[in-house]
Image 1 (tube, rainbow, N blue to C red):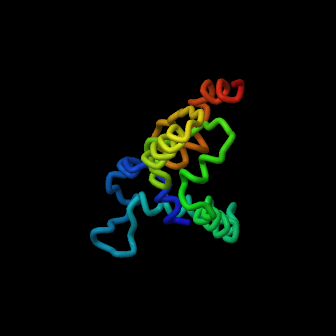
Image 2: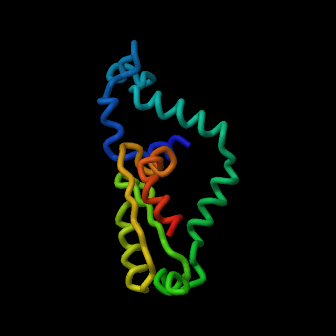
Image 3: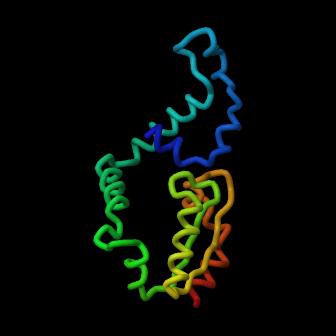
Length: 146
């Protein structure tokens, strides 16, 4: 969970810790002493682990790996879609970088599909799609009304 917690964050997120040690500790002198970022990651990951099911994470990972696997290409799979599309990328997402969304939009447009993009901004990276959706309320409402 610690690795997933770290990877889900925006690249600049760790700067807030600025190599600051845990109060009263000195990681440069004692190997068991920690930096503040380590303490934050451990406590946050422990909290996530209490709320998460390991099997759920494994199945979610496999679902992502096999998504559209039966098609020869993403373009072939998306060409069959009858839906309108709302793509919601997060600029700092390191799990699904914004380039992936740009590629998806380009593929959909080339297939003649209706695509709306509503990018998220903020310092939460991948988690912006959980905590930052209010910032795109208006585009979501327009999309759903359309």
